[in-house]
Image 1 (tube, rainbow, N blue to C red):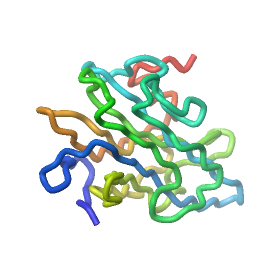
Image 2 (tube, rainbow, N blue to C red; image 1 turned 180 degrees about the horizontal axis):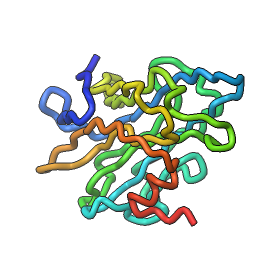
Image 3 (cartoon, rainbow, N blue to C red; image 1 turned 60 degrees about the vertical axis):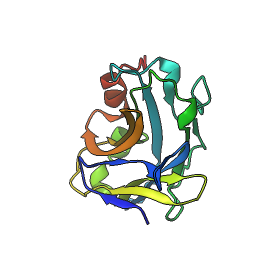
Image 4 (tube, rainbow, N blue to C red; image 1 turned 90 degrees about the horizontal axis):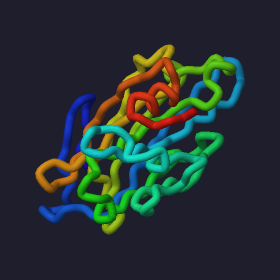
Length: 193
């Protein structure tokens, strides 16, 4: 098992001194519906330039846009039920070598689909986590388990991969939004119009 992170912590991603090239970011959760309504949580990735804003709207990767224009970031598909163990309910594949030098970071978010109409929020979600796995070895490099203090928040930035001094690092973020995925998209310059 890799490094266990707390909110705000960073870790350099390398395997025995060798930089990683190909990783999977797994995002997971367990919902505890109080009214019997199903939860549909959606993972997404925003590829940002040096200004920490999305390179373009096409660099917002989610269930309706499964790959970035260069193919460096690919979503494996929408999990409508949240069923799954350990690896993550939804996964995003990252080819770090294919990300351009101008990439500042890749931000990973999870939002609750139709949260407003269903009256759902992250206060009803247990065991939320994000993890980074080296695809060459299958080894989990790091994991961040989010806390349970997110009542009222309908979307969260779980973490981010970013490049600093030629090395890829991961930061545990855990920032919640009451404005849903549109709030995250707006903050990172994605036009959700």
